[in-house]
Length: 212
Ligand SMILES: Nc1ncnc2c1ncn2[C@@H]1O[C@H](COP(=O)(O)OP(=O)(O)OP(=O)(O)O)[C@@H](O)[C@H]1O
Ligand SMILES: C[C@H](N)[C@H](N)CCCCCC(=O)O
Ligand SMILES: [Mg+2]
Image: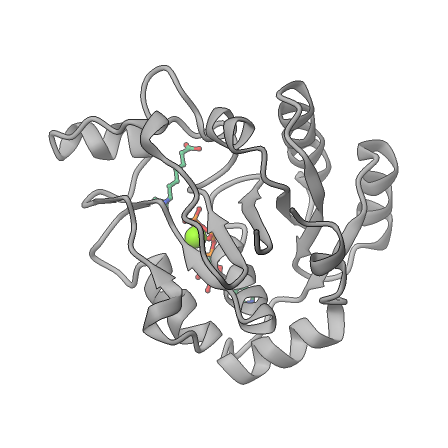
C-alpha cells in the first residue's frame, strides 16, 4: 500500500489546501477532497491542481460537490442531499495519496457524525495544520485532544504562518506531537514560490518514513 494520509486543521481557512498542494507536488501524490462545500469560487481540487502543478489524473473526483460554502451537513441539506460518511473509503492509488477534510476536525458531515469520526475509522496518519498566531495554542491542543480521544494516529503538526517560536514550542511540548515544519505566508502565492518554500521549510523524508 502506498503512502496515504489525511490533512486536517484547527479551523477552516488555516491553509490545508495550500499545504496539500505543496506536499502533493513534493511527493508526486494524488489528492482527494471527499466533500467540497462551495462551488462558486475555485474549488480545493482546482487550487491543488494549479498550485501543486498536478496532472489531472492525480486529482481524484470528490465524493460530494455541494453548492453552498458552509458546513457540509448544512450544505448537503440545502442541496437536498444526505451525506453518507460510512460510504467514504480512501481510494487505493499506486502513488501516495493526500486526503483533505473540510474545515476542522469536528465539522459535521451529518447531524450525528463529524470528520474526526471518519478519520478514526480510516485510521490513516493525520497531519494537523495549525496557524502560528494568537489563539492557535488552544485550537491546536483541543484538536489534538479530539484526535487522541478517538485514537487517531497523528503524524505531526504543519504550522502555517509567520514564525512564533515559543507558540510552536509549547504546542509541541504540551501536545506531545512533532512539528513537521512551518509554511510561511507567501506573497505572491505562486507554484514556484510554494515549491521553494516547502523545500526550504520541510524535510519530505519525514512524510515517507512514518506513513502507512
Ligand atoms: N502559505 C500561504 N501563503 C499565502 N496564502 C495562504 C497560505 N496558506 C493559505 N493561504 C491563503 O489562505 C486562504 C485559506 O487557505 P486554504 O484554502 O488552503 O485553507 P483551508 O484550510 O484549505 O480551508 P477550507 O477549510 O476551506 O478547506 C486562501 O486564500 C489561501 O490562498
Ligand atoms: C466552506 C469552507 N470553505 C469549508 N469547505 C467548510 C468549513 C466548515 C466549517 C464549519 C464550522 O467549523 O463552523
Ligand atoms: Mg481547503
